[in-house]
Figure 1 (cartoon, rainbow, N blue to C red):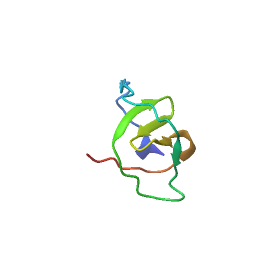
Figure 2 (cartoon, helix red, strand yellow):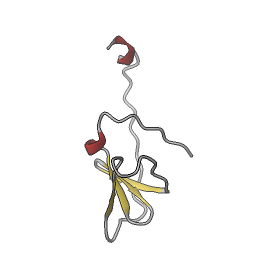
Figure 3 (cartoon, rainbow, N blue to C red):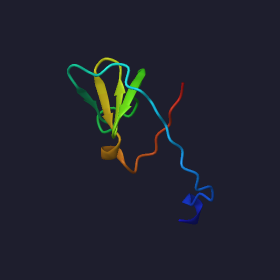
Figure 4 (cartoon, one colour):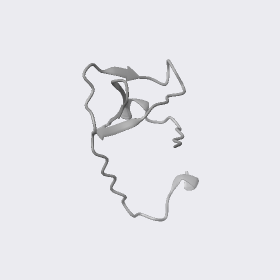
Length: 70
C-alpha cells in the first residue's frame, strides 16, 4: 500500500462550470463500453456531463483506473 501514499497533502479545488444540462440523460458505463469519448461540458456532484446528453457516474466506477486525454 505504500506505493499509493502521496506525500503532498495539498488539496486541489477544481471549478468546472456546467455549460449545458442534458435534457434526456443517457448513462455511460464501462461495463458496456470501456472507451468513452466526447466533449466534457460540466461536472455536477459525482457526475461528468458530456455532449449528446450523456453522463458518467464517477462513484459507481470507483476502483477503475482511467486515463483522460485532450
